[in-house]
Length: 403
Image (tube, rainbow, N blue to C red; front, side):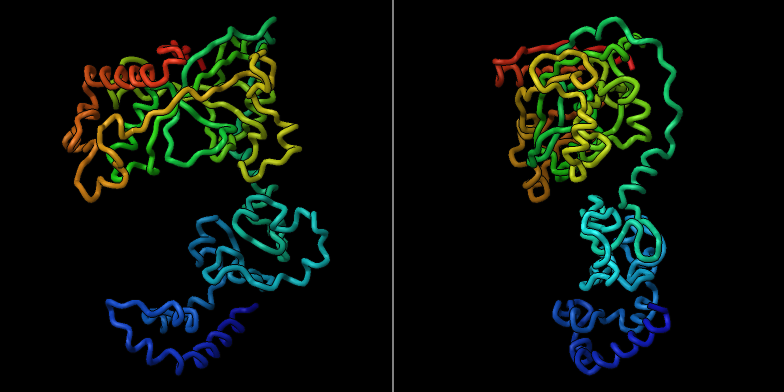
């Protein structure tokens, strides 16, 4: 659809709706909103009447905020085939392109056969679209992005004669009230999560991401022969987002040469006083090359991940760890402020204020850089887990992060 045609259609639309909405638009005050029905009929707000033709005349992806967020290039609203994508202000074109009818239902050209495009509710042809361009949500484009910035495969010493030593320790996660099966995640030792809570979470009202609980996991792990041959128990830390490893070249740099091993990294010790070393860990699940909504049975078979199917950790490439939930503590029980996320705004209580270095209505997080208070916080949390979950060991020594 050409720009000229868009201008003609826009002009016709303005004429058709002018009489219908003129009175209603005139009655809208600066403090009132025009009704949803009016907006649907007119497709405009009072302040946008004069600029409607300019908006309609610009089909580029960059002119549609939601399409721009996806970093889509070219035309989207509509594209060069006359189809508006789901990220356009008015939504996707209801009638699919006639060309779709001739494409096999299982073709990767179709948006719905590329999980990231399907997640965006895109319809028709995306990979490539009728204009010959593949959108950023296409599997082929995601694979290209995954390799950007990846360095060469590491040069490794020969594998060791046996896997690494068996290690059992606690790891922790902070979460909101949503619960889901863990399959490719990042975790931390207790010091790492206390560091994260103090730096990112407890000074917000409500807490960042509505975080409400600290969950503990008992992890048993060992290095593969390949990793043990490098004199290490842990690989380099990798980031997981929605169950996918999002650092460049995950398979080529980590899983292929070493197996699905745990990674770790030490955290910045300078911003929070802690009685030890804060560390974050990465635990690869099945099909770590894909987001959770992209994982297929075939991918999970080809990329089995490191979590063992049984209770014994063998150190084989697909059996490097087991994980068992070992209790959780509501963050409200640390500060003593019940239903903090719900009441902090209305009551004025605060778990922590960065400017004053203390809370309002609680003192648990006071003294961020105070070594004594930092030690007391960690001990309080450790003792609380031991008291509430006596079936688990009170203490398990943190492993050395040797990545």
